[in-house]
Amino acid sequence: MVDGLAQVAGQPHLTAIVNTGDDADFHGLRVCPDLDICTYTLAGVVDERGWGFAADTFRCIEGLATYGRDAWFGIGDRDLATHLHRTLMLRDGATLTAVTADICAHLGVTARLLPMSDDDIRTVIHTPTGPKAFQEYLVRDGARETIERIGVIGVEDAAPAPGVVDAIASAETIVIAPSSPVVSIGTILAVPGVRGALAARRDRVVAISPIIGTRPVEGPADRFLAGVGESECSTVVMARLYADFVATFLIHDSESPATLSSVAETGIRPIRCDILMNDRAARARLAGDALEAVG
Image (cartoon, rainbow, N blue to C red; front, side, top):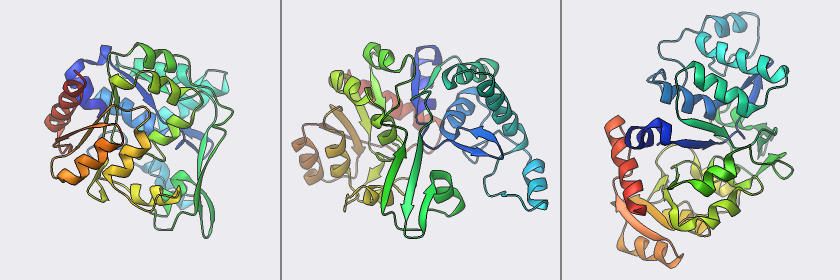
């Protein structure tokens, strides 16, 4: 989505507010997966796998495995430099916002990427075998276990990063990407002040559904919804979760008239279109549809 919007609007006109609840420390290094994928994508260096640097090697992580160290999180050698640089800057007192801006500048990214907060916030997934950090649940264990509940440590006492609330207040259009409403978008919304800022601009907010029918387009969004007490994974549930701050909702063109009616009953205006992004051209097309939907 961020790539599509950059193609349509131009990077200098784009601000992305990015989830940091998935961040983790690996081998003493701060890794920010969502910030990194947005940065690498906009820099044009992302690998075709959808994460990390293109054509990266993994000699360091392979070496760690030789010594019996955890090697389940695939940090490439070029990617490692980003995490080293970030960790050293944080150690020297820089904020995550400043670190992110520095990394973007060095990689030629002219969009503004903002972490949702400079405070330390961590998503914890509680399962029948115990609590797990987000990356442990999703990457190491393959999101196989049932989720009993989801906690977001530190979010209640956190503050939005500098520029986040102002960016929402001044944006011409605000696009909610088709990410998980619980552990990606939902984590950003949990930062005090963010949801209210969006609600104040509701008429200019458009969201793209990450669900078609009753199945996520990608990832275990159904498990995460169940983890917060939602028994159903559907476009209608998404609309209900977003109704207080979203005015327009792009849903897949295969959704039924009954679904459109149920979404409309939440107070959101549904628009059917092709929400799948299988290549860069499709990303730009969907970004254009989202901006046009708001007008």
